[in-house]
Length: 404
Image (spheres, rainbow, N blue to C red):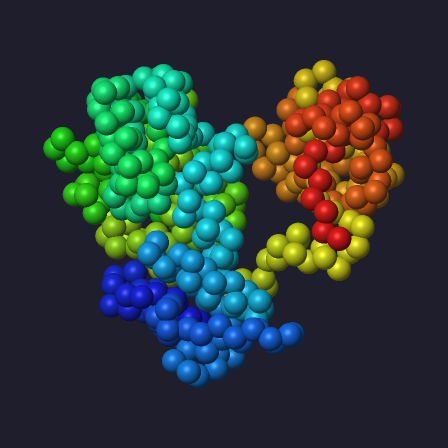
């Protein structure tokens, strides 16, 4: 495999470890400065040049895109994708995770545990927003920030108002977030590669510092994660559209609370703490994907005119509760069930004999015309249609994504 690591810091620990791990496994690897690429566009032939030389023969790319060059860096990654080079993290996934507000919006929609958060622009909305997240103390965050930079704890409402007013005066967008008191000064970093957590550590802040980041002086210790934390970290990574990520979680009373999903997680802290070869796990995953790549079904479906992906929600009281997938008769309408979502569980390729329960969601692929035709006009406008109200041979489809 010929691998390119995109990084502006070839001598940093993470870049050197990834390069070493690739070389130890017999791969041809180079660390390339992200901003030294030139992107050429012409019909049918997307090209990349690096230091004025054309890029042609890379099998895979591992992006390590810093926050300061997100726009240009993701443009380079996107160009590699258009050239059919496997990218460990896509431009779309990096952009999703880099924007704290957008990432929380995505996680919230998919019922992932997050600290209660609010985003306001008008000064008059600040006090009500603080009250909605439980009052002071509150955490105030810049929408873009890394390594604990731009994260502040306001002990009182007046402090919070003053901080927000100052940041907004500097044209900064800020989030107001509930302070998870039971997890004060500590969090968990889970390092996700593909569909598994390959290493995890607990970070503990020192002294009066409430931020536990290692870059802020936090102390790290290895931790064995409960299954709930593993499932949450993996699912959050997948929702972001990433395949390699560091997932930061608070240990809340109700379970894991996602703070951030990092698309360029550092290796030094977690490898030093756990003694595990995290870099090796990343390289082995990339090599396996080059040999047998996963695909984004939404992109490939552009050749299947009239077909699409949709989500079917099954609410309490639906006549489909207690029935098997086969008994829903979806297959008669040329609709195939790809995945069943049940709470935090993800069940791929569920068997036809599996019984459905209230609040299940079915990710389906099939004819858009058939799926749309099953939903009455009024029902289509609801966020989560109740299929109990539909005819016996009909289902309710939400969030249909056309790929025509």
